[in-house]
Length: 90
Image (cartoon, rainbow, N blue to C red; front, side):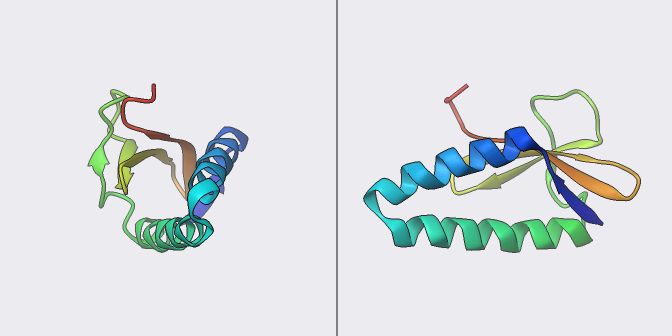
């Protein structure tokens, strides 16, 4: 399935990576690489992650990555990445 990154998701991810890079640029790069690996996995197995706690529809899923939650929606031929945030930050 194709991954579609919303503008909001990209902004949130950039904010997270900048924050991590303030103290450790290598950790930010590692975070991004490992997240990309997980995204590649869910593009092959979209129902691998749990149903979202934030949306009441089975097509919305939560990918948990190093304390961050990424919400995505499964559509017919694509996965739409909607948001990424730290638990308790919302």
